[in-house]
Length: 272
Image 1 (cartoon, rainbow, N blue to C red):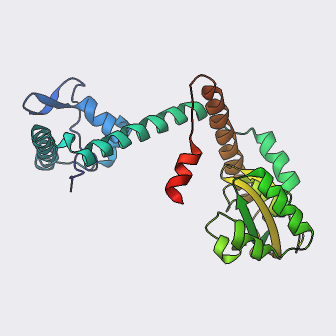
Image 2 (image 1 turned 120 degrees about the horizontal axis):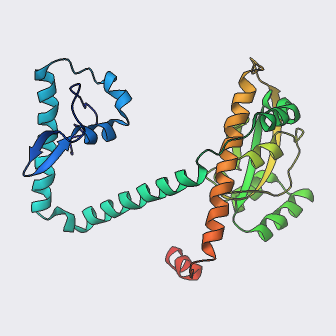
C-alpha cells in the first residue's frame, strides 16, 4: 500500500523562503512552495503542529521514503503494467473532469431574492415526508405509454417490477419515506411533493431518465424544519441545479464541435 505521508502530516519551519530546498532525493527537491500547494495554502501551516527539529525531520524523512519508493517503482517500469497504466489514466481523466467542471460552475449561486421566492412558493413541501413509488425508464415514448396504462387503472407496483430500470424496480418502485432534497433532483421533488395521496405524476425528466411517481401516503415532519433551516436547504438545491444546468449546457455546446458516433446495438448484443 502506498504511504500517504507528506500530504497528510506536512510541516513547516517558519521563515523558509519559497525557493529554499527542504529535502532532495537524486536531484528531486521538496520546497516550501511544494508544501504550501500540498496543504492547500500557507494559512493551513498553523494546523500542522510541528514544534521541534525532531518532528520536522521526521516529516521530511517521510517524504524522502515516499519519493524513494516512487522512484523505485518507476525504475522497475511498473507504469507499463496494464492495470497500473489504466489506473493512472483513469486518475488523470478524473482530475481533468473535476477541474473542468469546477471551472464551469465557479461562482454560480442563486441570488437571495431567488431563494426567498422559492421558499415562498414551496415551503409547504418542506414540512412533510411522503411514502412514494416511482418508475424510471430511459425512453420517453415508453414512459408515456406506461403512464397511459396507469391512468387507465393498471397496478403501479406491477408496472414498476416489469419495466422500471431503477434499483427499486424489483420492489415495485418503492422508495419508502422521503423528504425534500433526498432524491437529488429538484424536478422530481417538485412533482412528487405536490401530489395528493394516491396521486400519480406526469412524466418527470431528470439526469437519469424519465420518471413516473406515485405518492402512497404523506405525513407532517416532526419536528418541523425551522424558518432558518428551509432557506439553507433551498439555497443548496438551487445551487446544485444551477451547476447541473451549466454543465449540461456546456456539454451540449461541446457536442456540436466533436464528431460523435455511438453503436448501442453493439452494446446490447453483449448484454443479451
